[in-house]
Amino acid sequence: MRKKLTFLLLILFSASGLLAEGAELSEAVKESFFALDNVFLFFCAVLVIFMQPGFALVETGFNSSKNAVNILFKNVMDLCVGILLYFFVGYGLMYGAPVIEGFFAWGGVGIGEFTGSAEGGTLLPQVDFLFQVAFAATAATIVSGAVAGRLSFKAYLIYSAVITGLIYPISGFWKWGGGWLDALGFYDFAGSLVVHSVGGFAGLAAAIVLGPRLGRFAKDGSPKALPGHNLPLATLGVFILWVGWFGFNPGSQLAIAGKANTEAVMLIATNTALAAAAGGLFAMIITWILHKKPELSMALNGILAGLVGITANCDGVTNVEAIIIGAVAGVLVVMGIKLLDRLQIDDPVGAWPVHGLNGIWGGIATAIFGSYGAIEEGSSIIYGNAFAQIVGSIAIPVWAFGTMFILFMILKKVGILRVSREEELKGLDIGEHGEEAYNGFQIFTMD
Image (tube, rainbow, N blue to C red):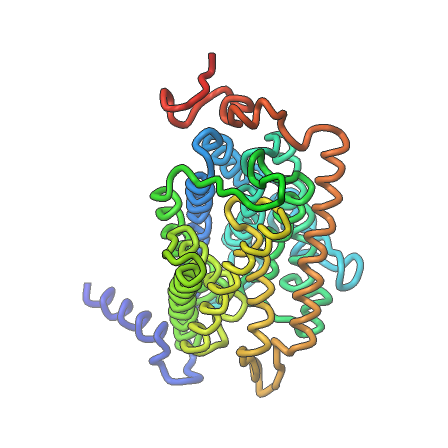
């Protein structure tokens, strides 16, 4: 018992960086660091996957009760289709060997064998896949809310397969796979652009091609509110997403063993919380000024906007800078929603203002506030330079919007994009699935 306690204390002290710098670590300690880092990433992957029910609840709560089953079903299929497509195609495209240098890669089907040594900072391919596929599913599910109430289920399945298997992995390779944006010096720590702007701009393309829900805009073009049916569900969803983001951002450090990694993880987590809080507060303040009353839905979107804005730079900004980034994100999400109304673009949950617009803000904020240098052996490589951040903040959204616009136009041409007017009026739960989320409480019945 005493030997076990001594060994445990040794691991704890060494993992906290309390061993002398440069001290030779035993094989047992190295393997313990290896286990710690892999278990840490596994835990973070579970948190990111747990964001999926968060998205499902937010999108369901912000929309009509007659479409609740449809929205929940789309979120379920995002994960089912996404995991399989990313396993067979996406993972190899994103982290494979270059085929077209800097732009396109391929690493084969499935997950490779572990060939590294058991030490801190070395990850098992299995847990790396689990973490990465959770990000891919996040990019896909963002669109679900933007197309709520009118996109056919079969069209959504096609979209989900394409974005997870092709679109997200290809642009993901440009940065995280060592492609041309990475070589340029573009920096996106956890995916404000790589993940969130892809989903946000895909949602914008879908909303434009689909057109608005019936009754969303008056004949003179003025917006008409179509309130969500369950703000408690939406609020719970945002809380779940906030918690899940502590896997999304801290997990992107990919290690926790050792003093430097532990300090980084804690800074990232704290910056994540601060930005979210500032986003929610400032979205509430701006809405209160504009509408003379505070609105819960705007505050909830402000929290999510702050989380998206800090995701690219949470490892390299101070606590105060994180608050500023979140506050700006909270203002931007309100202005973005107003802009869509003016343009008569119907985005029921604010997917583009939250993830698209603030994905870009995260990339630009990295150049304004981020400090990244001296990352290995005295080198002074500055990521987050203005030119690279501007290029990346244009290239990834344009890629996502352009490819998804083409896909949705094709689906429209073949006649499977939008449900019929009758189905939209009755609700997609009955029209598409023949079941109700709240049996006995619907205006229309299944008979």
